[in-house]
Length: 379
Length: 152
Image (cartoon, rainbow over all chains, first blue to last red):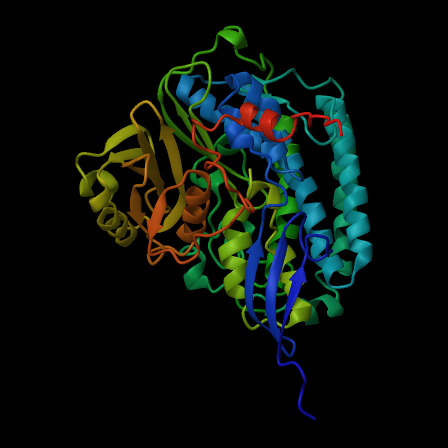
């Protein structure tokens, strides 16, 4: 029998479990093959960059963290580093270690959500529940340190807002021990699960020779076979003093190498390995953290005048390169703050390109495995 | 070759940050040359509104994994009705940045087929990221105007 409709259009999102947040994909499907995909954004634009031009430098700190919901701290860190760069400030050593701990806790909590999300998009809903649940233990520690669970507003230009509580080491070690014990369970449920492997291997591949050209960064780039990480390439906070490994394809440790390059399976495996590295980084930072001040004694915030100039600062977030381009004319307010979110390339150009030829059932897992966070597409 | 060797006029802002000021007609060539010389990661395209000079500054950011160096290529275009040629053939992701700048600032990129609605929808007003777009006034006019009660 001849099919009545040959080609049809599907709208995935903005209210769809396969779309990572408030964005949507418009796809053209023939049979069950995706012919073409277009990313539709605009559901979330809050005009942060415009607002930042109207506020004094310090007032922007509580604003920037809202640019990425699952991992807000990278924004605070990058913005603060850009201001420090223009001001010519060197922050205290202890503050660098505290920033490292906060950023790695953020990475862990973001990866837990993503890995759980990828698994859930392939029908393993338990992993998503676990991820959200285990992330909550990290949020508890965030609350103890910063006073807030999601938007911490803790990293400030000049250091961090206040010193960590005295019992941070015990609190964090307890959570890290717990997470370490949980990791094998996640592995059994996801990475070593036959159902997951059958669905995830060789699906949604980013070709190695195209990865850098397309502007892919972060775990998605490392799973394509490059050992590139801005924590190593341009060390910030205390990363230059900490000994850690950058997992990349095909060095997947104890996990099997099943496919060629950056597919759903490898991207998940790299994130699992990065979580183990994050635990190791936090443990080291807790051990080596020196005593001392945590915030520079700088002039009153209202009086800040940032010297004229251009600064671009980047941070390795759980999703890729998070960059802040800050322009000052020597005044009390920035002239321009432009945020480079990793999802901008991953969610639009890369997804639109690799979606072609996908089975319609593999579309959502592919989109989620790129770890797209729509708030950083539309700031 | 590193950016400083390729372009002696480049200015070093700090270690690993290079800024090249140039003109509109030379950008394509510079970006192409940097791409061939190891600056293979196109980071982003930014736009800065210098309203007092009547200019937009377009900044092309490129990074070299090999030299660990970030290059910002700056050009100035007129605020009103000026256009720039698209560089989407060199790096595909530039297309999206151009779409956003076209929508938010009003710079036209010749040769980009997707300059349409991107983030905004049905926006008849001035591009909102321009400095002369007054957010507060706009909000007050559009959202907080109390409709007059008409007596019949």
